[in-house]
Amino acid sequence: MSEAGRSAVSAPSVIAVIGAPGSGKSTVGPLLAARLGQRFVDVDTVIEELEGRPISDIFVTDGEPYFRELEARRTLAELAAGGVVSLGGGAPLTPEISEALGAVCVVWLEVSARTASARVGLNDATRPLLMGNVHSRMVRLMAERRPVYAAPADIHIVTDRQGPEQIVEEICARLADLPGPQPAV
Image 1 (spheres, rainbow, N blue to C red):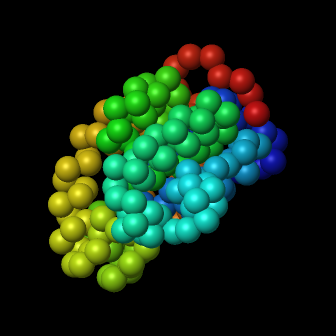
Image 2 (spheres, rainbow, N blue to C red):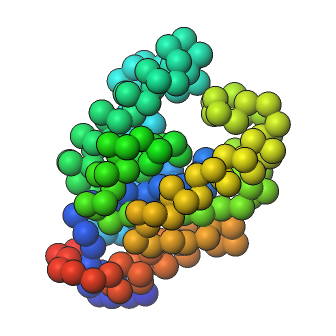
């Protein structure tokens, strides 16, 4: 697409990128933000920076409920600040976050369990909910979360066979089809 075509893309002021671990949120998010001239933030990265430790350590030391509370506060703050916001894989399960997603544009990046397992690694210790047999846990996790991801999604893209740039192009094309007023970027 030409630069003129790129600048004509309309975009909502807040785009939440959701999906399972390995779906491409942290890769596609910054590319999408750059394309739209918006800020990008990865909520998991912000939490790790604020806490001074990896999420896996937070889970082990303080437990999942503590992490989910941190995640909810940070996610709501980042959504309020605007831009392209990559949420943690479990964030949409939290009622406050789920409710907030109803007020923003949501892009759901879907990936097969096989592709996600390959992307995150077979023994990724940085993803506490996937410890052990990554593939079998991924299958279960995706089955549980699929309806939660689908519910708020304005745009749904399967990422298995597309590169990040192709995914961004598809998102931008689909943004133009969304109803309602959207400022041109």
